[in-house]
Image 1 (cartoon, rainbow, N blue to C red):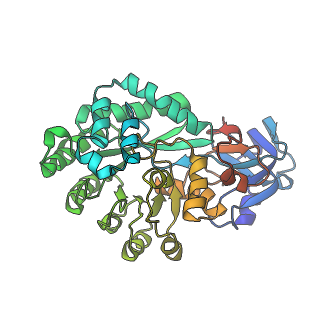
Image 2 (cartoon, rainbow, N blue to C red):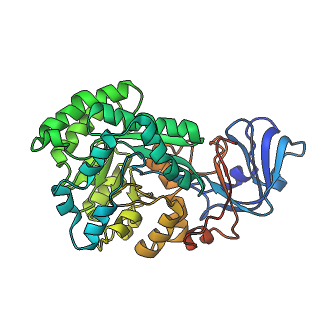
Image 3 (tube, rainbow, N blue to C red):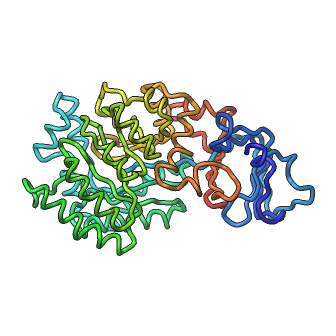
Length: 414
């Protein structure tokens, strides 16, 4: 397959745009390591890749409307942030200070802080205000080569506020030339008006909110916070069943603070991913492997919450479960807008390899969103989403802290 990729031409020999004199890391699943090709070129016709491989493999009579000399720079697929809560209002710096003073996340949540405090601010914000607040966070990701981002709701916890979050996420994609995948996370916390009645709220999520938002075309996937301060496995399954009835894929916040066996439940519903996973056990790992699901690790939350329970990296490797990485950008436990820093954290805190880290923010992240056929690697027919870097070797992308080595971001060939 590597030989095919390196010599393949898709469509005509007349390209709209061609990047040459580059080092290309294809990240193709069946390539060796990162699939690095020296002296390489990439070309697109409209928005998809029509050629990728050594320049020497270009057809003799090729021509292009525009040729860009990359001067030996590294090209990777555009990066993918597959787990964010990017659209919200307000901040929780005061709660950060409370945690520094020894108060637990759970204690803060039970006293009216945590997710519910962000809900109050988000409900009070207009759609335009939500877009304005989220735009700098998204811009920071784009400045590091991100071409696709997942954005969850979950800070509205009532129909119209959830819809505003999801509409704001869609509009950010239109404004910023980036693919946005929207995830409905109505089951993020119990809102104040349903205090003490979580089952009734789950009924609202399943019977009113999810159908209405799905009919409006605002949902690409459905997520739940399955945790002792979130929702039980039984409540989670009600949401999954409602999503399955409409053919909507599911994912799950699982095993972050305790082992609720949520990952195994999600696997039974052929989930796209299970995310966090610090307390995931061996049967849960096996279930994810059997479901061909992706494990999404979130080292920013691990760091900010000063966790000590490491996710089961060795077990995920031994069961060949794909491992994706994401920022988990959110106001409470991961106010992080650097996907490159995430790779450094994963290498340093979780002892992941350079190849694993870069696969985690490209190919595996695409799989976590159900977008492997279109994104995550540089192969014929996939979208021409590129990150062009001022680095000599891929390891520099993981190694540097605070440096932005991006030379150019290309989205859909532009």
